[in-house]
Amino acid sequence: MSTRGEMSPPRRRRRTSSPPASLPDDEDLLQEILLRLPPRPSSLPRASLVCKLWRRLVAEPQFQRRFRDHHGKPPLLGFFLQDNISCPFVPMLDPPDRIPGARFSMPPHKRHRIIDCRHGLVLFRSQRQSPRLLVWDPVARQKRRLIFPPELDNGEMYIINGAVLRPARGRSSHFQVALIAQDKEYTRVSGCLFSSETGVWSNIKTLQLDLANRCMPQPSTLIGNSICWLDTAHHDHPQYAILEFDLDTQSLSVTELPPHLEAGYDQLRIIKPGEDGGLGFIHLSHFHAQIWKRKPDCNGLAVWVIDRAIEFKELRSNCKGYSLTLVGFVEESNAILVLTASGVFMVYLQSMEFKKLSKLWVFCLYYPFASFYPA
Image 1 (tube, rainbow, N blue to C red):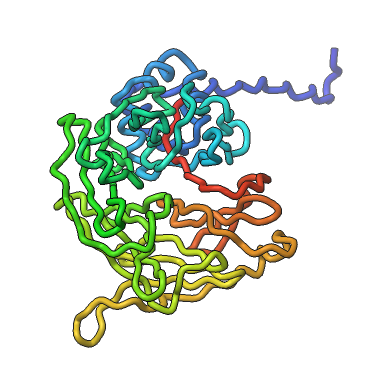
Image 2: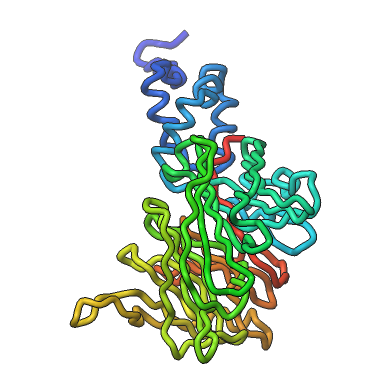
């Protein structure tokens, strides 16, 4: 007991803990929240572990279409190699977003050569006696085999390259395949387009062209609504040119590169869109590069002009006495892939920032693979 005059100790007030935050249960609100998750491969799988409602929402095909539409540009997951033996997939993301190479391994058919990769699809050409095409969706694990149009593979004409794409920038289940062939005298090229929606090849379009030899099997570049390949035109000296196939008119055209940029192994070129979305290319020699674009001259005729010059000083230390080698172009990121003695680097042409993707040192064609991957 306390005596009079003594103060009783103050009673401690019991702190009332705030109730735990509850997850929103309105499905429309939840979808708007989930749509804003980063488009990395681990985002939707992690969200699906929260509860059954979240798992159901992120698994709905309609939500996944909205997720792709919201982000627009798919992440770059890695790249395929064309090493004439197999077509291994080399992942480039860090865990937990890293896709195992075996997950996107080559389909169980030998003697396939990759010739293009775009919009989450890979295009192979069979090397068997009965040549065919294979369109492969590694994410959906779906394949579609196509037979060459007989007019382009008849002993007089030979398939030299192709391209695959989705008509609506990857938002459609349909796809298109463009094929280019040339005659054995190297005097003309022909092209046609396959649509999975109609299931037929278009009419053959032909262009007279004096070629130095068989067109080089470089990956294509999508510029606007045209597929472009690098070619070697023949005049007094071999000279590079860009072969363009217009997907709207399904017509062929050729644009020669500046005449002083002769074909040579010590100087490398790759097609890229210009800043205005028009035709352009990058020319690399050792550690110096020039970005070229088409621009009207004073008479209104389109001519080649140098847009800007680039020095790759930061990558020189990774080359160990070797020069840089252009091995690919990433359309979604406006970036080039360069091979050094230390591995493969991706260089963003706008900011000139670079990132090491792999320690591989394999001299072959590299096909970047970008796709939404809700594992």
